Image (tube, rainbow, N blue to C red; front, top):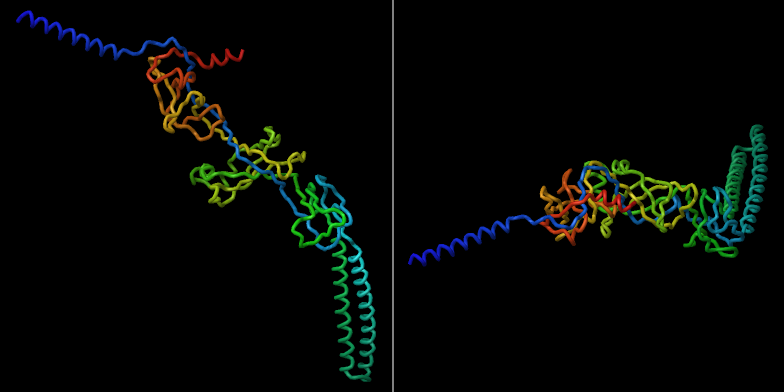
Length: 384
């Protein structure tokens, strides 16, 4: 019995010892990995990110040129794409019938003036006879009425002459402002009419241009700081914007957001906005496309490289290091705007935290002890 008890005691001791040895082995942290990974220490700083919006360029004024009289085009004085000045002749419409109308109106006016002169002499003579009691007042009054009718006919003839001269002047279609001539669909011999659907051409004033783009409902809320300020105040507070052209280059002249529509389109959830750019070289034309670039400056913020983050179920994480150089999965939130390389962290990190920027999603895993190396020094060495 004694021998059996000793045996059971020995077995129990072995089991307890094994249990404690197992627990102590599980609680012992991983040894430092031989793998070295780049680490940065985050500190507050400033950042400027850019948001881009598809845009269509239009001249500050795009004027459809239409005739004000009907007739056949006898002369086209300009060509497509030509720069013209206010008052410059663009088209000439057949003037024969309008010149004839002016001549007839002038003849009618001359006839009316002669009738006025005759009626005036008659009225004067009748007045003299009335003063001498030779004729009745009724007879003089009839002469006076005829004079008044002659003068009215003269006024009508004069108005008809003015109208005829105006129509004749309309046969020369001139530029209402400085600009660039667009497409000219009708040439000499074509019939021009004020009722025509298609204009003679379109004149674009490109000394300044508007870049039309759309802002989302969220953009508008950000613009008003969640409703704490007006849209106008938000527009004035925006920095100067740039225009990226279709070939990827930046237009050398900066502009500013001029207006934002007060109505949000229910089908798109966006509001129309326009940015104004000076165009001294006439480089931009109506119909150009590009991207309006709005810079967004942030001060006293923490930046992390995008390669240092990973996502799990729409949540973003980074690996930070604790005092034992052990990787800790840390959730963060970031601003919706980025430059394609970095994120602005709004929560989850503080100044002095060490963040792993290498091997995220491949080499590094939560709970792993690593040998950190300075990411800045590594990047500097790579650029030598």
